[in-house]
Length: 477
Image 1: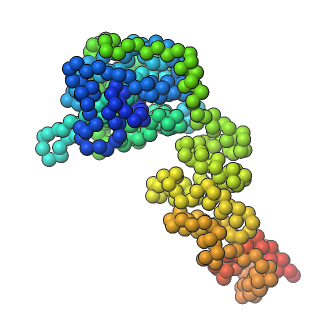
Image 2: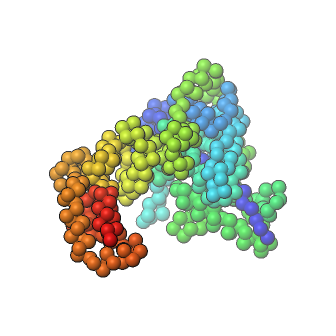
Image 3: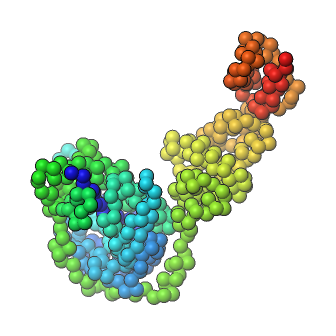
């Protein structure tokens, strides 16, 4: 039987505010355990939460960027469950009246763009973190993260493949980074994902029994966990067995999921409106203010790069994959207006270097001004493209400017016709057999001659002039 996967994602995004959502404690990552805490985020008796306005504005930005309808009145609720890293015994979240609903984003797939609907976006505070001792059956509780502002983005069950799920998650991270509301770092927990997956016979409308997957901290893990779960559920259904509704953990070392607990329903959490927090009233002026602060978003920027710079769609998609890369390209094109050539060098040569050692583009020694100067030297015939790649690597590793390095290392291209003619004549005279082959119609031998000239000039000969001189000599009867 052919089964179809039905997947929905619940994505938690940690908002990049300086302080927590209901107190003034710092949200800085990496501080010593339990140093960024206070009576409010520790849930001490008698304390009162005070809402962080910036967190609400960040959540509104994400809602607008994902085409959601923002509810002018939304309410915080208490979500009750008991866990060692939850000091209050409940999480402050939103239930019946969330911040925003009914949105969507478009996700690229192998079969083209697909629209994934968003059910809701709501705000909540984060829990703490358990640190498990590797040598003893002991766990430590670090409450620094408790109270950090989160938004939860709940998709509709519109995703059909693990690849789509990973691409949807990448799109969410891309948007939050463009908005500047989160760093989207999955390794540090700034962006976390739970997946709900069920199978049904292809063509059937009714959903199957779902399992929830947790403990996935990379796009790769999300995709691998879903792939495994599809295989597991398929095998059970083909054997005539039932799928159990449960929460399962992904074990990345083994590439499998295993049962954690029965899946909770909403009533298990005993939601009710938080009596310490008044409803949020979002008026038109506040909403307009947040709308005006939105930057150009990835899809709009990609379309503009195609129309304004004449780039192929593939180039535009790569260059807009991150806000830093898009800004780097535009700064380069301001100084060097040949957009396609700049795009090629950024995508192929520069990104190859940054990916090799994981360097941040903002910290790269090859600034847009440096790259523009390098490309200008190629256009002027001062250096060849081959030499330019060496210069680029030198600047990337050690800094400097293209002109300085070309002068210091004697890399200037040889374009003196009389100087090159003498070298070309010697190469042709020294290889009579290859000359015969060329004149017999084997034109590919030209590459041999060019290579010989380049070897003698240590790669500094002007290739266009070399080809011109060689062709003139070789074509002589």
